[in-house]
Amino acid sequence: MIGNWKWLASSGGVIAAVGTFILKGPEIIESGSRTYRKVRGIPETPYPVSSEAFGTDSIPRFGFKFAYPMRWDRSDPDNSDGSCYRNPRYPLVTVVAYGSNPVLEPTTLEGWVEAALEGPHRKLLSKVESGRYLVGGSRTWRVREKVPGVRAVYEYKDRKTTYRVMAQFVQHDAQVCVLCSAPKYLFGSFEQMFLHVCDSLELYEPIWSISNEQKNRRRDVIWEIMKAMRPTEAAKTSGLYACLMSVRPALALQITEQELEVELREMEKLGLVYRDPVAGGWSCHKADGN
Image (cartoon, rainbow, N blue to C red; front, side, top):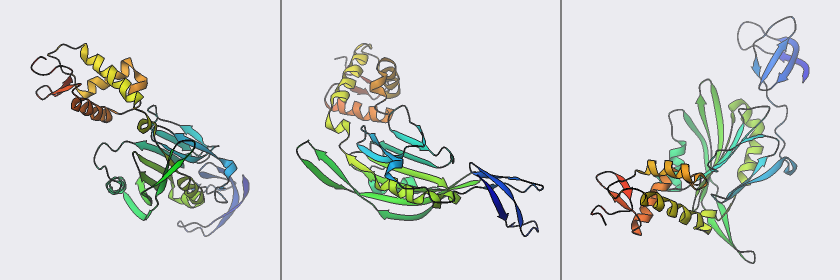
């Protein structure tokens, strides 16, 4: 984009100058007989909120879906926890959505939000209740259950850049979060789009609450791994997770190491495995050798 540009200097004694600029990414590159400092470019109009510009992304592992900008670049984690979209022209503008199982403290919505918003370089600007409805049932009937949620806007500083973030937090069987982030000077241009993404969040029953098939398969593999061990051996959770990743990576990528620890405790209650308090590991053999 090329056009006339008038610049009012904030310092240096120059009042105004007229020249030609080229808008390229997040900066304005000056040209002409004089060289001026580079300044950040801002979109001329807010990012258009149009249904044609959005698709629907679904994360079945944690039971949620949301609208995403179809023309943005996408990158996802290997463990299927969520999705990340980055504006191709302004790469510091991102939309991230992810889920997690509330197995570690804090496990409440209030505690989770408080922990996510606290920090020495974070400044809370607003926080409002913004719940959702969990839709479940079958093809012939639907159940809508109200789920509490919070939408917050805060700022944080990373090196020399101040970012403003709109975050949507919701907790049902899983903790679900949508983070829409942009440098502070760009946030106003994308704010309406961020609201559209946060408001589009829909919940449904996650696959791990519908069926225990994957968990049962994982338990069988863990038990076979322990069965191959000597009666005097005990494996720590980290070692079992690494072994599971080696022999059945698809089952391992569905959970984290901390979530495997929870599953092992459930297996212990069923009498399938035993924890050796001395070695601090797990075994399918009791300490007395049985």
